[in-house]
Every structure is written in structure tokens, then in C-alpha cells.
Length: 179
Image: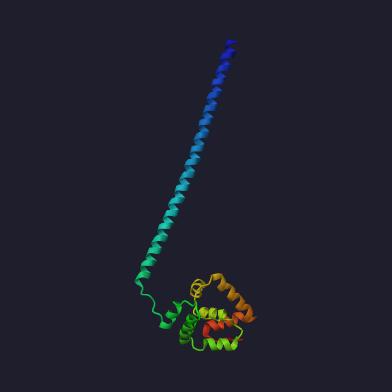
């Protein structure tokens, strides 16, 4: 009986030792997996930082080049005056219109002759489109939201009908307005 108890105790000790070793192996494997994940994360971070540094160097070199280049001189001082205008009142519109006519003579009369049903807002929009002004700047000049610009443009295109795109292209290219 004593031998059986000794054998059972020995088996229990061996089973405990085996379980302990298995637990140690499992922990070691988990540590290795965590270490590999951490190393991959560090590599990704290093790659990202390197990429950011390259972008920053590129931006700095482009900025330096741009600072060395002289600002372009506007071919016509009237165009620069047009681009800096704010058209909030009728007096502002009249001043803008006279400056615009200096740059693009006959634009408004041709436009009115070809499309008399255009509203004042649509005529203003066409003039600003002719100057190739972006929507944000148009909204600041006219004191309205960019969404209003989009709506006015949409309604104008509907009013011009089937050949609206070709009419706009011709108008913006050389001032000729086809109907």
C-alpha cells in the first residue's frame, strides 16, 4: 500500500511538473507573439515617420522654390481689379461691369441679345465663370453661399436648354454666345 501511495505521489508530482512546463511554454510563446507584434508595429511606425519626413522635405523644397519665383504679373491690371471686387450692391455691380467690359468688350450686350431671359444673378455668374473664378471666391464676391452658386448655375443650365454645355464652352472660351 505504501508503494502505491509513493507511486501515486510521484505521478502527481510528475503531472504537476508537466503542467508547470506546459504553462511556461505557453507563456513563452505568448511573449514571443507579443514581441513580434511590437516589432512589426515599430517597423510600421518607422516607415510612416520616414514617409512623413520625405513629404515634409518635398513640401519645404517646393515652398522654397515658390518663394524664389516672382509672382506672375497680370497681363491686364483690370483683371486683377476684377478679381478683388466684392459685388454686393448695384453700384458695385456697375463698377465691376465697366471693368469687365474693358477686359471683355461686348460680352454683356452679346449675352443679352442671345439670351434675354437670363436673370441678373445668372449674368453675374456667367461673368465670374468667364474670369475662371472658383466657387468659393464667387461666393465671397457675391456675399452668398457656395450652394447658392451651384443652384444658380443649375437653373441657368436648365434655362439654356439642350445646347447649354456648348453655349457655356463657347461663352467662356471666346465670349461668343450661341443660341
